[in-house]
Structure formats: structure tokens, C-alpha cells
Image (cartoon, rainbow, N blue to C red; front, side):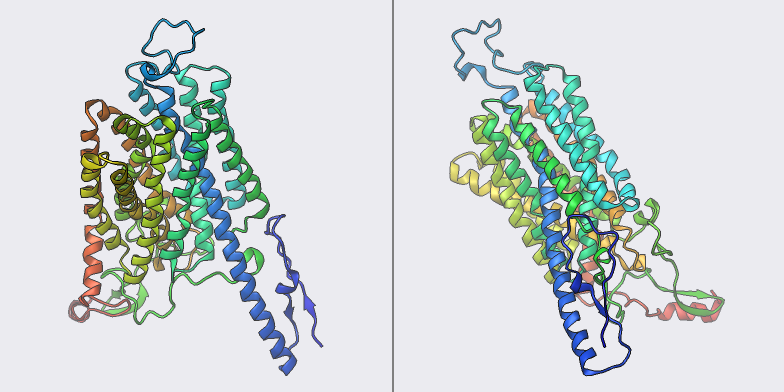
Length: 540
């Protein structure tokens, strides 16, 4: 006789559909054919449900962060509407103006220093985003991700709408828009650490580069949709360019509350294996997890562990000590500097250099994000195949530098050249950025030195993306300060940033090259002959 006992799932969200029969477990103790058949059937259904849940979570988190980026994009589209070339705009006959040069601009952006004012708005968002990101990961490890994400998206929708309402309320105060950007920057930090932690909870390390490369296209998809939605309203009522994206991200926040499943355990699924238990073929850095030598004896116990209690959230310093976190964080600082400069200034650059109107420039800028989608997927595929995350990033960064130079000088000669250069530059610039913020962050957040603790994903992701966000804040600010001296100087700054990003990965690239050449000093768990000699001779 077989008794089916349903398993209670108290942590599951209210709206998530439960298929109770999938979680029934036989309780018979006698091994018989019926029992074996039941086990086989339940196991097959269980695995099927696990993969369905995993696909569902991947889709949901993709949708959530698409909404985050969708709500950030409108300001770059609206810039060219807030300050226009009024000499080519037809003035209404019944409009009396005192200044023919700025009559169509929106105060206070009708001044000669409008680029500096735009830079202030960008940095009000980006600086607070960078600062808040370091704390966001710490909160994300300690709060339920479903509640954390839901509140973050609802608040992001509120502040995005408030920016757009400035048009209807006829607000011309720089302080109003700056304060909205500050608050929006803070609440948007809830997104990235939480979604990466959630995806990392459901996916193991096997094909993480490709899976997260495809998944990370949400950044570019959000930018594209944000540009297209803002472009629809920018010429008639630019306030709607913010209000519509604000309503969209608020709606996804409600969706998150009812449907997000944070981790497999919440629906009685076994969590994925983040690293192999077989250590025989796994190569580690020289000093990492090396045996401890004490009083002439060699202990096989690791000399140090970043986390001892798997139920305790990792500390900030503990996450920072994980091998590779510092290098990739500093690399992302400069890679994100380049990416976010294009995010905030590319439409204005195209409008000024190619003389397109605001909508056409916004539509053309989406090609950069289309290239970014392909670049992110290719970076993930190559890094999965080669096992060289750092090398893949470095090669793409090296290729991006000359392509940026060429785009500045020949990119606007024809429409075909513009399209081709935007696609190539987008792929090379956003590829490393996508790989580091997804697969690399998840790899480091489930590093073997954590001894199976999964509560480091949010903190590691926040450190890496928070450091990168410092660059994201610097890039648009520097572009605003340098652009009055000429766009050439802006591109020289971007090229320099790409080179610096590559240099910070040089040590990791060297170690990966050693592994490919078969010259890695030691396999994890082996003991150096020199260590044995000194242990026996001197008792150290």
C-alpha cells in the first residue's frame, strides 16, 4: 500500500501555480516493483517540474530587469528635446518669444551650459546608484528577494513617473529633476543583485556563460524598448516618455510579488550543483585551498575558508577576498564607463553629428544595443567553450578600442557605415560588460572557497556591479565635461578606458593561458615537493 503525502511549501509566492502531485513522495519501506515504478515516475515528473520552474524563473527575471533598463533609457532620448536647435523648428504664429535661439527649449536646459546640466542629472542617478549598490547586496542577502524586488520596482515606477509629470505640472526647477534622479538611483539598486542571485540559485555552472549571455540580453532589450517607447512621445509630450515606462516597471513589480520563486527549495526542488565534488581534475591557483603544514605534519584540511557557516550571509570583506573579485570589479569599472557613456550620450551624439531629429537619433541608437545582444551571447559561448572568462573579455576589449576610433572618424559617412559600426561597437563594448555582470558574478558568488554557501551571490554581485557603477557615473559626467571641447576627445577617453579595463585582467589572463599550456603549478589538493622538504627539515 502506498500513501501519498503532500509536501507543504510555505515559502512559495501566492500566485505561483503548484502541481501537488509532483511533490508526493511514497512512504513505503518495502522494496517492490510497485515502489520502484512509483519512484521512477515521481523522479521523472520531479525533474520535469524542476526544469519548468527553472525556465519560468529565467523568463521572469529577464522580464524584471528588462523593465529596469526600460525605465532608465528615456532620459537619453528626451535630452535632444529638452534642448533643441530652435532655428530649424517652425514657431507657432501666436507665440510671442523674446529669444529666438532658445524659444523651443525646456527651462532650465535652455542655457549654454545645457550639456553640463544633463551631466548633473545623469550623475545624480549614477552616483547614488553606485553608492547604493554596495549596500543593496548586503540587504539582498538578508531580505526575501521577492519582497525586495517587488518594492524596488514599485518605487522605481513611482519616481520615473514623477520625472515625466514635471512636463504636465510645468516644473522648471533643476532641483526637482535632480532629486527625482537621486531617489530613482537608490531604489534601482534593488534590481541587479537580486535577479542575479535568483538565477544563480536555479542554475549550476555548466553552461552558465551561454545561458546568462542570452539572459543578459534583457539589458539591450530594455534599452531598445525604452528608446522606442520614449521616441513615440518625445516630439509631442515628452512627459509620457517617462510615465509609460514607469507604469510598466510598476506592473512588473506586482507580477514579481505574486509569481517569483526565489530558490528551488521553496518548491521542494533540489538546488543545482555549482561546482564539482570531484577535485581530481580541477585546477586551482597556487595558494588557494592548499594543504596546511604545521609542526612538520601536512594537513589536507584547507588553510582558510571564506565562509564557515553555510546558513550565514557572507560579510563584505569575505566576499571581497574571493579570488578574482577585485580584478573583475576594476575591469568592469572601465568597461561600464564606456557602455554607460553610450547609453546616455549616443542619441545626442548622433543628433549633433549626423543631424537627425530626436526620434530618428533614438531609433538609430538602438542598433548599438542590438549589437550588444549578439556580443553578450557570443562572449558567453566562447567563455563556456574555452573556460577563459578573463581572456574572452580581454580580447573583446582590445578589439573595441580601434573600432571606437574608426566609428568616430568614418561612422557617419553613410547610413550603411553608421549601421555596421554601431552593431560592431555595441557587440565589442557590451560583450565583456554582459559576461562580467552575469556569468562571472555568478561563478564567483558560488566559488568553491565558499564551501557551498549560496548566500554570497547578492553580495559578490553588488561588489562587482557597484564598482562598475562608479565607472558608469564617471563616464557620462566626463562626457558632459569633455564634449564642449569636441567629440573626438570623448572618444579618446573611451578608448583609454577600454585599454585600462583590459590591463586589470592581465594577471587572470596569464593564469588562464598557463592552464591551457599545461603549465599550471599545481592541481588542487596536491602538495608541493618544496613544501614537503621544508616541513620535514625545519618543522614549518
